[in-house]
Image (cartoon, rainbow, N blue to C red; front, side, top):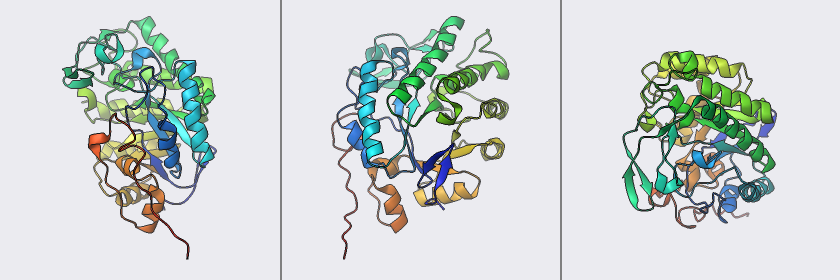
Length: 352
């Protein structure tokens, strides 16, 4: 079943295995993909769909060192090399648009992070001088929040210009859209804070703006209900996510990319209520075949895999053949050169 084709809002996928977005921190300092990035993604073009690493929609959206952007012409040109290489290898690729919000540091970005409210998250972040504590972010004004919505739409348009087949909004893992959903990161008193209807508003407006700009069939969104990522508290996740998914369904987006959270009841409610394609990532299941099989049987259309694709450029073939998998070297996951990036071996197949 993982190896059957699937039509994703008209985009034909040869299998149901999605390469999950993974930060690799190998871009140049100006946010342009490095010379190795095109090779890295092209090597993995046999995935049904590739979702890129998180790409910041603006300089203010950057959180980590050496991450790529989609807010300058030079960045668009760099990504065009990537998408051309993936398409030449027969692949399909979406750009994940990721605004880090309060997860950042001035030593990485040159400015204080921004967020829904001036609430400092617990934890630390890597900077050029080593690990440093997160700082209290600058609270976005209402006008700045509305402007940030347009930053996402502008980045989506640039993604299409760069040759991406579509975009995924990063509404998960503790970043800006997720921060607006949360009870402890969003203490606002304007139309973007307070009630459930107000806290989901930012994410819905970002989705609507990007869909209006490039077409809803080219827009997906990633959600991670109740995971606690980024020091977020979501005690009312059972109210927030059904309301959010209902609003998003009205926009006819291409897909929801669900990171399975701790509440299986909530996971299943989203699976049953979302009308379009559903991608599921379940980090609690180690074996990739077991993960794919379980969720495809439970109603997912596609299953995303992270570390397995990182370490196995030819993952669909290896899984189809039952071949041994390379193990990911997490010491080289973030930053560095080709080692642990483009040098994982592929199967040596010989004809008789």
